Length: 171
Image 1: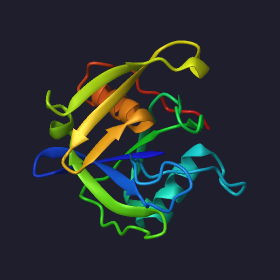
Image 2 (image 1 turned 90 degrees about the horizontal axis):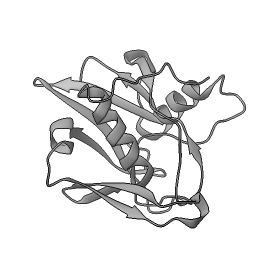
Image 3 (image 1 turned 30 degrees about the vertical axis):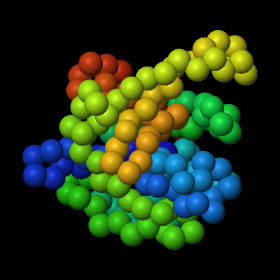
Image 4 (image 1 turned 120 degrees about the vertical axis):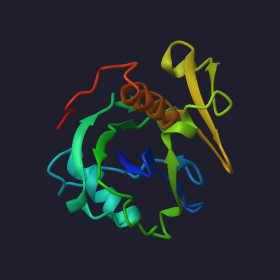
């Protein structure tokens, strides 16, 4: 996964996508660009960048890797994902791949920090062995939740200085 941040008009933004309805997993959900590792990918960072190039036509030459968030197992598909944080010095020129992405969202971090946007629920997930907190962000037209919600929560904690853990990330 690629958590791409940029500043526009003095405000930090993050790039999210709404996955196409025809996707096999997590159809029509809001997510970071990302996907499965190919044998040709040198490491998971290369996977994140390649997937962002495929899904939103990101020009990899304009981004800089600054760290990674904690790896996370998704609730639905039980997939391990590793979100990398990257920055660019301007709003990226992106184009959605219609096969994979229905919409690209440029979300100000200030919107995600609003009390009325964020909520958390405790779900009794037996296959994880204990109840698990599920984070939700209610954006206009979309609910961000699950793995993406958890990653956004950690990203906000890191960017606001309430969590100073930011790792270089695996692989």
